[in-house]
Image (cartoon, rainbow, N blue to C red; front, side, top):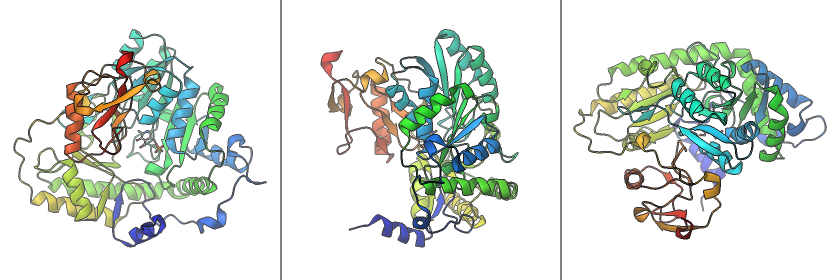
Amino acid sequence: MNRLYDKLISYREEDYYPFHMPGHKRNTKLCQMSNPYSIDITEIEGFDNLHQAEGILIQLSQRLSLLYGSEKSYPLINGSTVGILAGISSGADRGSKVLIARNCHKSVYHAVVLKELRPVYIYPNYLKEESIYGGISVQDVEDALIRDPDISLVVLTSPTFDGFVSDIRAIAKVVHRHGALFLVDEAHGAHFGFHRGFPESAVTKGADIVIQSMHKTLPAFTQSAVLHSNRTDLNDKIERNLSIYESSSPSYLLLAGMDRCISMLEDSGKELFDLYYARLNEFYSSMNKLEHLRLIKSETKGSFGIYDMDPSKIIISVRDTQLSGHVLHTLLREKYHLIMEMEAPDYVLGMTSICDTQEGFLRLSKALLEIDNVQKAAGNKGCRPSVGTIRPEQVMLPGEAAETDTEQVPLERSAGRISAVFVSMYPPGSPLLVPGERIDDEMIQMIQWLQREGYTITGLNKETKDRIDVIAKTLH
Ligand SMILES: Cc1ncc(COP(=O)(O)O)c(C=O)c1O
């Protein structure tokens, strides 16, 4: 029988290189800690209480607040997921109307279900040429708030999973002018604000609540995250909600890992980011030789709602080749032992951080040039469904639909029915279908196409993967 620990150890001994999270990249030269067993304690005398921090943990929180420039920061041990659940629960009253970017992570939708919120969706701009979501336009936010003046909270994801940043400063002004609160899911931006080569964080751009996953883009253990609050009047609610959603046995290993990460940034952040940025630039320059594969870079800035772009995300477009994202992803893994973060129909995404090595960048650059060399220009790639252009009709509220009687039907015969489940491509984990949305032929064809092409779709019947839970017929 395969045992997890043994498998991890033998994986460690192989030469797989991580272009994925966590951001410490298993770089044990840069990141060091004692044997985990020797420092894994619980909340004993002298070590404070995460749910009522007054001692050593309040100091951790204060250092985070100073580092990022927030009014108050809360270290989290259940990922951004818990920060988003607590942040939305604190910013929106039960049953209230909220404006949500449709490309938000599933945790945002889970908060909508839990608090029985009434979501109004705003769609990010879609770069059809690249099959990728861009940013949210300031004007679209303003229009939505004018149409629905009773919206009390706006929730956007910036940067997107792919690194596109919206104009948070301008959006914050609009949101506040309309009397709403502004929460930014900055899960992919914990490294923002430390170097001029990377975008500024939403924390200093006027957002009320900002949530970041330290583990995604910084050297911290998986699940390490932070909630920044710039609204001291909300802090009591935030603390109450965090104690509901967060474990009552917080891991001191994760907290110690955050402490180490903050120390690294305080002590040598400048040098580490300078070196990292220089390596990234060298990598991007080496990619100028590509003839068929193509990196999506900052040339998109200023259009499609894109205010800024995070260079840490390496987006390799296969649009002008015979390859699909899935094929390139597989090739990089199987032939070159380079493990990327995500595949999409038209691109593959790699994540980088201050812990990436020169060797890692060289391996990726060499592999991509070699693959490019044997490509021919693509002919017609055929008709492929476009993930970002489908806008399902909301028939029931997600909270209502998630608790109603359901039945399971074959996906291919589900047109016209109302989904009772979230169906997502994973990663990134933002839903294609939300409970309460009507399924149509276009959606069915897209899900089936993604499955045929080898992408992971979650939310369908776990065994057969071709059946879907829908609202029982008697109910509509
Ligand atoms: C945009 C976005 N928000 C939130 C999350 C949840 O973060 P975590 O995994 O730290 O709970 C993710 C996870 O991938 C994400 O991509």
